Length: 249
Image (cartoon, rainbow, N blue to C red; front, side, top):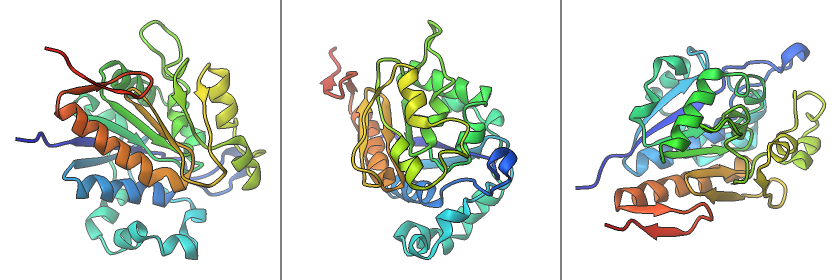
């Protein structure tokens, strides 16, 4: 009998970009695309946020083109999903050990609360150390920058990762408004940062760490999470170069 996958999605709670007051939040497609991919794969999905309560949606992710995205249209017709976004539990109230995977969607809001959240840093560290799946997309890897291994080094040091590229940040005109550039920070922490073409789908895996570069990568990351969980359920493990290896014994 196939084990049911339990996935925790953790969203930003930041509704503005610091002192500028410019509105921000979660990038909606980066939630909805994985959300429905996980549900359609038979997973149990729990949504939480840094502070709990209503999750702010970045107005930039609500444009006309975004509203035509299949997962966004499905979300708009899904009262249960919208209710989950309107009243999320705080991350600190969640037992993260109960989940097989943790997924961090992006949105510029993450740049203002993910890196400062001790609770999120603990979740990230525990998930990676426990050989469970940790996945993130676009600005979601901001949740990795404060997480440490048991040896006190960055969880991204020496690991293959991606995330919103500096060139993409410049292209959207927000490089002067974020507290740090994500690519630059990941590189400074010793990550083996990779990128594809700006605003095109690109994702990488390094063992149980899966990351995507931008909103277009959300679907690819979700598929990789599902595949990794199914491999784990079948008794496979994954090395840090992404190669699938059978579990001996």
